Image (cartoon, rainbow, N blue to C red; front, side, top):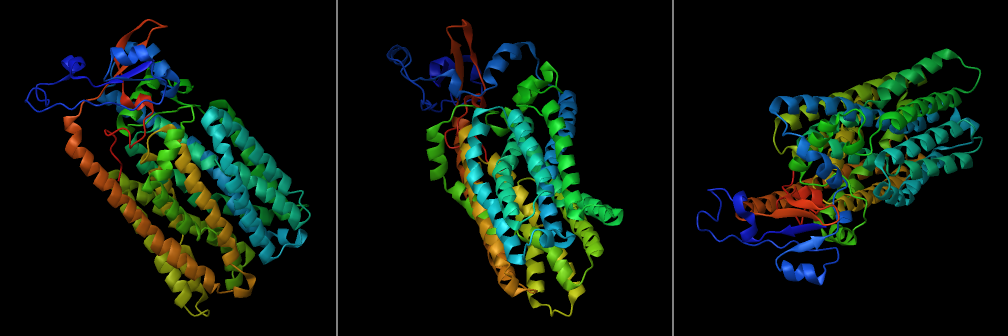
Length: 547
């Protein structure tokens, strides 16, 4: 059992000379709400205490109780070394998985110029429908978050990666657009929890600050996807294969996905307690430093319905949903860019090189964004707005420029590339601004649902009859993705900053003591980190929101 109490008599030596008690200030007693069963005997013994069962606590609690006493506090030098080790393993590993999954966006785009349309009898509108069906599958696939809540993250990622590789291979056997429809739907269904799973893993190993500034670096594998995939496509165009180029293209990308699946099966961790690349001492240190800086749990396998209810009632959740819905109405630009290059007059070979330039600019922006967030405190919201300004200007220019200025229009399309930086910054912030494992999973499901809804709508904005300028699509992108989305970002920052101010004014007056008791194992009562108890950010008034 885990007993949570804040009785004045029990605080003892934990009260420092400068504490409210020593200065004569009234020390308020904190009573933490109970979500497990409270027995009558326990209630009578500790009238100011609440008791929850161990299964409601963080999954790393048992691990820490078994090993933490033998591990000293980490020194500054050791922490620097550990941080470097974690960053060089976790971020590249998650980024590699993300690269393979996102490569599908590039393969779908290249099919418009590699002959797949002709071989599968696909048109502009049926292509749009295939993209829409991908995101229908994406929305339906949010039910897979149950697996992420119930099963170890590493095992879920292994299965997901394998099925993904299989579906990419199957694309090469498609003979009709209806077959493509089915494959796209199931790809969306499988990918639905990929980014939440990767985000969960990074949240388990990285501190709040590390997670913020590495988010753009993580997403450079998406932003820079066009660079590597572009060179692959460039090489295939010169290979003169005996089979259709688009089929060979799918086989190559599927092969890469299968290789990454093997890597995931071998080293992808479920959480810090079983990370093969860490020693026992390092595992304890990772858990301590993450919980200390985030105030949030590592992993929790019990679905807590009160956290679901809180998530739905929290206005921050809906503001994040508003951002993702508005922002993702511009996402179909990723699928349309090759077609736009072709309509402007760029050759098939030239399109691959322009895509490399597009991706290179995206990656550069992602790196700059990472540096800014690392150097400037509480800069996430402002960074989102900064990187939205580029596509804002680019969209206005595309709408205003005469069609004869084709190279200028091409440049303005490339200027829209940093819109992806804003997306990943918000996804990371969505996670770090919430505490409570079930609350995080619920909020992920909410934002990915609206992400999917927007991406169902987005392809239908690019109707063949509106080409080659596609004015309706550009106007919708401008209004929703590049005006309303950043406004919702500002609203989130204002509310969270207000919460932080209220907590900073009161948190010094409150002392919370969490005590572990386990009669079965006969372990002496000991103080524990509040983050181990899997409270939400609204329950834990010590939680400070990153801005």
